[in-house]
Image 1: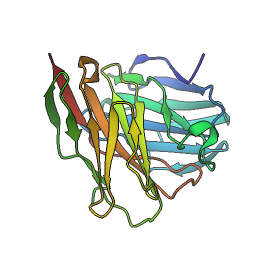
Image 2: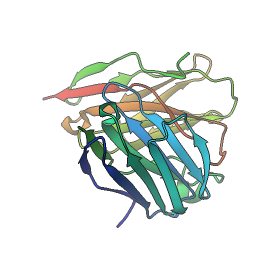
Image 3: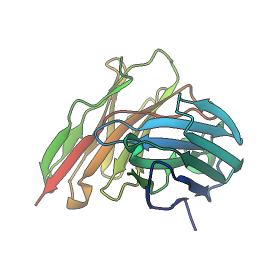
Length: 119
Length: 117
């Protein structure tokens, strides 16, 4: 596997279900992010982890719970979601703190996303 | 106030023509980075080009170039010789605080580019 992978790619769940989204980065980066992309809205930052510590929680409802067990893995645990939570959830990673490592500009590399539908 | 503004919801261009996608930004931080990403219908965000606030020259990457006008706070993306595969959503994004760990990107609403033959 290369880059950033996300599983599952598609998820349909009821409002009472509990599910988890998984993100894995194979780039040796030290920061990982969860974004939410709803129809016709800009990408919204949800959570940022840098060196496995949560740096930012952008006022996200508690029904979303992130977990970062190590620098390569990021989870988003979902419970009692609402239909308006249906969206594309994107994970990203970056190598922060050092510019021009292997020509990088600290750009964020994104996974393919999980398309979530809440019924 | 919006940090990143993309005023063109949709743009149409013919194959082989050049197209400019607009982006203006708002920040008081002297150190920042500007990014353009492409999002095809598959959903994945693909990094295209980067411009740092202290970079003296406009960034170029193949057919992509960034028209950086710092005084106007604009960072327009120019795609030369458009191809059918360029049809996608394009996002302008900004990172404030150069090289600070865990600093997230702020995205604009995006512009949908449609390339026709």
